[in-house]
Image 1 (tube, helix red, strand yellow):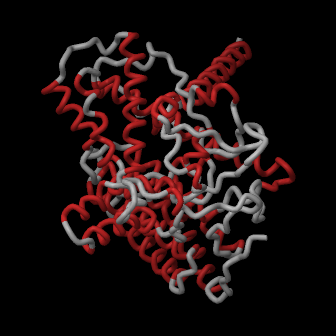
Image 2 (tube, one colour):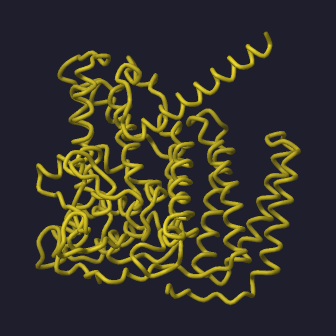
Image 3 (cartoon, helix red, strand yellow):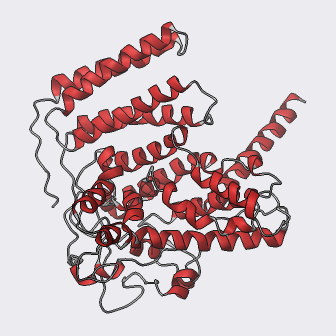
Length: 478
């Protein structure tokens, strides 16, 4: 009897796991049941993006393993070839770290996106529609996706909006972690494009579709998946989005789609990737990143470098009209050019060899140190994100955020070969251990945190003693 019950329990457990996996993976592709994702009130809508975090980890791992075992691991080797050098520890920390900061910003930044939508819907909506209606669910899918296309196009063609969106394009790599490289400020430019939808679409459908529209755009950040044939003319794909992330002249201002590529086809911004599977002549691999790379892993610079440039340029430009053009024309605009600049001024990309990536070499020991402590950082970030704004004492949120930001900053300095980086990491570790000790005395953290303190102090002391005097030279990719 007990054996039978155990077998049945195991079978039920296995079925639950399979259902969980199928549901989670399906959400990344917008494969969801309207009945299961329809709610009467927006506060009932789950945080689908937070629930997808385990699947982000899963797909990043699978992509890494694919590159490890494919072609003898060529995709991971530091070779200056188009089909190599597709992952780097410094870039992964920069991308995932940007995603952490973007998620943590919800504790500090007013939710303009949702609150502006609710204000328009509550005061100016034209009709009252049933949020549980199937046809309205379908309408919501299309209008939210169209709104994203319009925002995304403006984010590339309006310099002030580009100052926020540029964060997502600042990586010279293109893998699943690139999808997580997000801007703290982007929501302050995107909210305007949701307001027309607020005239008729209930907030619950808006909140739900916005999340799935975002999740769909995660899986397309990869070089592992090639051209998908007829689907290239219907949905956004890895191939189409690789073009969007390219800095080749033919890639600039193309493929703004969120879920459906049909908007790009309709509005003249569609471009196919120039690969052998698409065309026999004029093959041109995509080089990723910005036309003028930022060459740093410092998180503050990643988030605000172009905003600083825009504001300085605006201040130094003479005349109100020209100042407004600096803000609201394209990032490539200057005197005597069209609104979005001249395509001829985009630096060309050699077809035989990819551009040299910014990748200052560090020792294996430093990389392992960062990986271990970055894993701890991910756990801490996940724990704090389990709470909503207002649920935790603000001092706890602020201290945790400063811990995460300072760690990412010092790691960025280490990767950038700043002369004070290793010493700064030791000082940071001592301060972290001290703050943890204070939290233990106030019963905020358990006494078992002594293990974390020992790891933090001992490893940073090792780093200071063994790595500080190692020569740091920029590695030339072969």
